[in-house]
Image 1 (cartoon, rainbow, N blue to C red):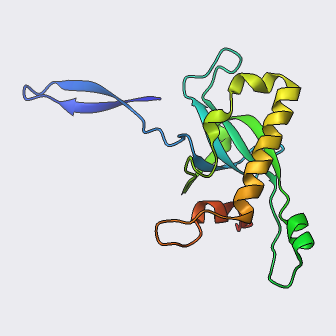
Image 2: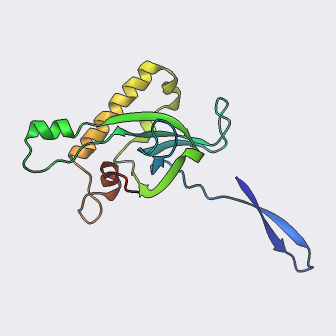
Image 3: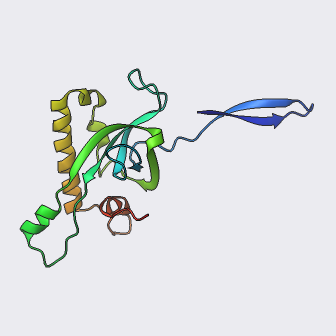
Length: 167
């Protein structure tokens, strides 16, 4: 996206300067999907296509998110019940930038390795299913043993995935 800024020269002439907008949909950014079947669901941006592609001639991103988030657990619950409530259901989707809302959270590469996802694989349903299984395993592992931040506390970006949206 380009914008034109007005600038004046010492001679008094107006000079138009082209500036580009800041890209805030970067790899690892946690977003909320605003449109479609997954509206209101949280996701992580895996790959961005600012200029679009041949099948999708608009700015879009490949996102990986949670269709069904894990439920709350407490200390009284047994291992079996905790395991059952920690199940999650992921989704992989190409989404137009207009249907994404960025959050302040960024998931690091250690939490979700988005580089292993190859976008060409998602045309084939079997490969997409395999990728979903891999993502489900990764999310489940991270929810069971959440990563810690610099202070030794549980990372806020992954906790955000488990919270309900309040609005």
